[in-house]
Length: 277
Length: 166
Image 1: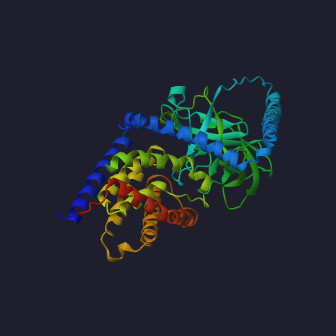
Image 2: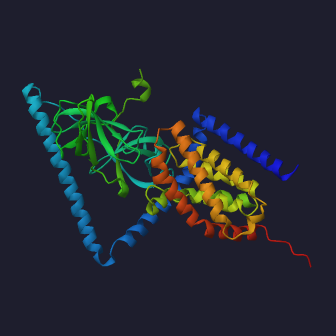
Image 3: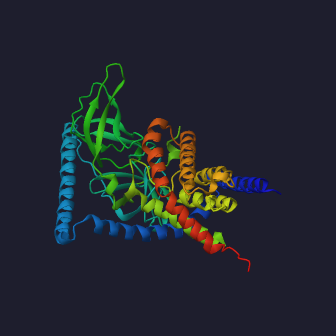
């Protein structure tokens, strides 16, 4: 057998094996093997991510202001907490106004239970906007759980492995979030462009959308809990010949500097199979 | 023997690609450490081993990616197979050859990936992807092609020392 034939034989065999595994994976038969292989890979990934993050912090921060940096980060988290509180209070006030007119403002909202997770990596493919966190099914996480930071919505868990999970960011073009505009009191759908830019689509043409107003999750569709901040309107695109208007959104979360996130564990999203027609 | 080194090495490179390369982005492009390693090994005249490396490295990437499982493995295998046809050409000995091969391999890898994504995952603008991902990634891959091929040659020399007749 000459060199060329032997090369062709190796390539053909490997292609058949790969395609076979691809089909097994699509059918879900490869999940146990993937879980088994993911465990050591994710453990090493978490170990490396921790050190890389520490080195990155050391290199990017001036060393003589370490204590100031701690103080700044404490104040930043305090500001973020207060901003969150203000957003919550504004939303409550707007809601109360509507509900009071209906003589039914009693509404109970269960406190969110959450679990903190470290961000240990990003999708190696530039086509997918997702992150890896160091918690998985061993920590009782499941697919569809919302992921947030103190600043707002990050995304939802797309895949769960024993010790890690993949979180689909809201900037992924495949993600769509039902949102509401805080002042206009109208619903829309948050969609992402391929370059990560966010916009709210399906806004009624008659609605007056204000630049700067907050975008919150609406809770419609039961994919995310209601009233989680998503971002702020930065521009409005209204054309008379279109059915709906669109608005550009500046996300409240900085997706390039995510280190720790919170997974809301007591929210039960409707499984996709049940929502299908 | 090369597989004993290859499996952990490629797994580590896939992890580094996930953890580290986000810090070294050029536009939306990043260096593809696994692709570079596989092509560098292919250039040591071990193209059949490189194809096995491609599948192993591809699966390691697939474990860390939201793309359909096996997609990276298959595309890397195709690219390595195509690169294997360059083996034995008269210009093979030229010291700049790794740059040319990496340029072609990287462009092929990303163009195939883009088409696979367009078919299987989501519709994307090819012009945008070419400008923001393919060209910057290829530039970064070519940038590390020479040191990678030197490292691969050194590893090859250690694993398969040349016999000398006395």
